[in-house]
Image (cartoon, rainbow, N blue to C red; front, side):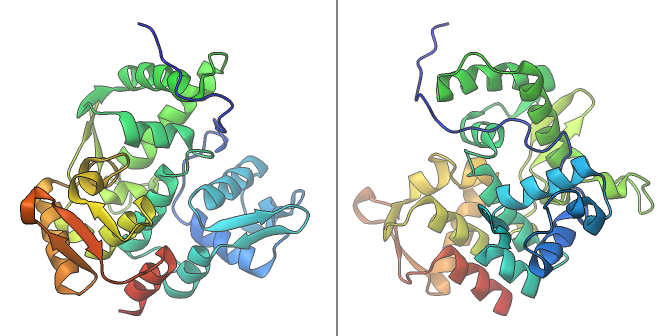
Length: 291
């Protein structure tokens, strides 16, 4: 099969997580530590401050940045982003599903630091698959996307493994000894494991608020208008990123229209969504928390 290279010299990252997925409590510890000391990750101090090993501290730093919770300034240290500041203020223990959905959206759209996550949620269409099928697809898509053929297949497989673990490994019992190793994003219910197969699943309607779709819409397009098809089925649209059904998508649009955020125009087959309020991602997050 001939692979058409999409781009060259594109920025990408593999295995920035040191083979550790996001664990319960890591992001909460991280944003608190960063808020108290911008140099917390300098030398070995980050491991001591967070009570973890040095490789885990590196992983926490990577996940904080990749999920949009922190920003790094060369020579000055690590600081909370606007999103990170609001999470620390309103939901420091990540108890709201809304917070987890925003983190998920930030992660899968971060193609420079979470390249494999971006490729999976943007391009992978199979509803049920094995780990080997995913690895094969991702390697092929990576070459097409970056134009790079000389890469570490081990790092690629590690990324696929961590991705699958983050979204599919769930707590089995109330006293599951593996509880602390389970990624909070598994609560979103967008991926399930059944023996040797993984399956994309539709999350529970009650686990998503309409503001999640509003946040995704703002991240997808800064324009005042966006087509319904683009928002749902387009690149990193609601179907691929949130995993929601068409009927759920329509219900969320109705809620947003009722709340005065958008106007949906279905005349002449246009099916366009017009933003009635110019809200930034920060505005949307703040509005949700204040509600």
